[in-house]
Length: 282
Image 1 (cartoon, rainbow, N blue to C red):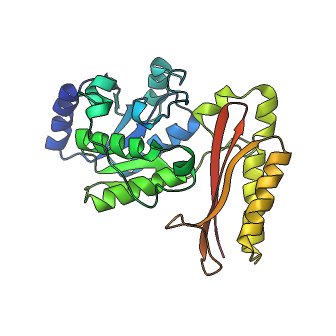
Image 2 (image 1 turned 30 degrees about the vertical axis):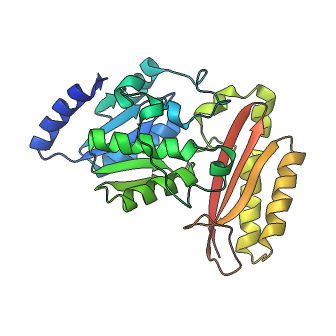
């Protein structure tokens, strides 16, 4: 498995793959890989002949008071994990390679509507940074397939809309959330949790499951359910960011007429922000 850092070298390698008529799958990551990321690589390998995992901590998607400087950079460990997972190539560019004129002068992509609310409301500019870097990676690599985790449900919706709106010839594939035994969604930020916080963290998924069951069983007042769920998370010791019940396609607040619903939650334990979601059909 090779690791390349420059676009020039990357494109020379990709040219060879395409001459062999190989299909290419991309798994964009920020590194600090865990089992959830590896599951994306395996899913990409099911769809494509060649799997490229990008590792780039994207400064454009971090807010002023977020953890850009302290976000773990673990390239050597990531390479070891990918080497046994069916990955073909690691692309680990520098910020200068991705944004050669600097962040302030770089063209940005705004994906309307699905970027609003939820994490988009809590992290202004975040999805602009996500959409921009993914579009850059798509243009750099020109994959046939790209795999994203459903844990970041809103992000997946943003990428799908951007790809569709801009007529990008990339099939975006969603992959199920990988969880710890107690239900906590695997995340690079879980390593920030103290032992005591780690014991509390599964409450997010438990509350999502409980609320989803109520909806599936015909409980009609979604606003009441969302408020109760948020209160329960606060009582469990989390600092609630949001607990929202949304239409799965539009991500707008769900109505009694909606049959496909997604529950999205974000909460803090200490300084660590955790997100999760669950979908339900009624």
